[in-house]
Every structure is written in structure tokens, then in C-alpha cells.
Length: 113
Length: 111
Image (tube, rainbow over all chains, first blue to last red; front, side, top):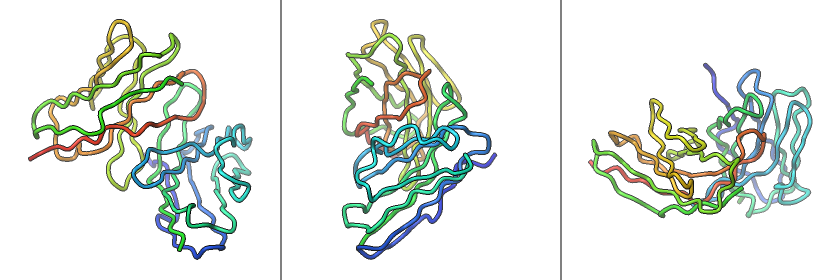
């Protein structure tokens, strides 16, 4: 079946631009996670949704980062006024529920010039 | 979640068994051992998880020591497509929560 999809796969932004990254979770999956992965590092947690509720946003690095999942399915991660240190791969994962494992999308590689 | 320790990198000949160790000496009784891998330019892929018994699926086997302070992921017949970074993670399976990844082990399968 269809897995987690993310778009765009690659994004180049000039410093100061706003970007929006999209995640389409597996159909029926209640939980959705965003992670940030810097080059050569493991993924780091950003935020978590259960349906449309954002239950944990403790990993968001600054108030320039904002995530939403208004109808409990598709999610968007928005980064305002991008900085060079925001350059990373942004990964989305979804899971059916509390007892299920997380399935990851291919990621969006963001490069800020 | 408990911290894990893994070797930075390992090599394995194609066709041989790849044995990836992981230490998790501070694991709690309700924490599971999970393994994910990440092939270059892809998102992490779930492999297997276990609590205290050994587990096997179509991808790999997981051997957990009796004291649960360490475990080994076994890929029985490694192929070039198994070249990836392998992450050992301990977490409470019953809690819908973030995964804390370490740096993992970079496994090179040699032809």
C-alpha cells in the first residue's frame, strides 16, 4: 500500500524566505511526527500530532517553525524567515496509534542559501 | 528513554551474517528495544523490536541478553542493499511518543 509521502523532495530557499513542507501520512494513521536531520546526524524530533491536536512541540527550535494538521490527515511544516542553519532534511512519520511503529517518508531536503 | 551505545561503523562481507551490537545498560523494565535503518537519501525504515525474548521476522533477528543490558541485530545473509545506518533505540512501546535517535552504526557491505 501507499506509504508516507512528502513534498517537495528538494527545496532551495534564499535566506529570509518562508517555506512550507507537506506530509501525507498513511491513510488512517492517527499519529504524525516531524523530525529534522542535519547532515551526518540522526533525526531529531520536532513535533507530534494526534489527529488534529498538536500534543508536543517541544522540539521546534524557534518560533519561526510552525506545524499544523487541521483535518487530522495532511500536515504542513512551515518555516518563516529561513536561516542557513535551517538547512536539513525534514522527515515526517506516521503511526496507526499508540501501540504501532512509526513509518517514515522520504524526507524533504531544504537548502537555505 | 534510555541511552544506547553503538559502534560508529562496521564492515561485513556480502553473503555473510551481519551482527550489529547495541548496549543499553540503563534500560527500564517497560522499555522495548527497536531497530531502524536508514539507507542513503531515504527515511528511516523499521526493522524489528522486542522486549526480552528473541524476535525474528523476514528482515532480521533480534537477540536480547537475559539482563536486557545489550542486544544484537542479525542480518542473516547481508546484501549490498543492506548498506545503511542502523539505529538502536529503546522506548516505551505503549506510549505514542517521539523516537530519540542516536548516531547509529554505519554498516558497509563489501562485495
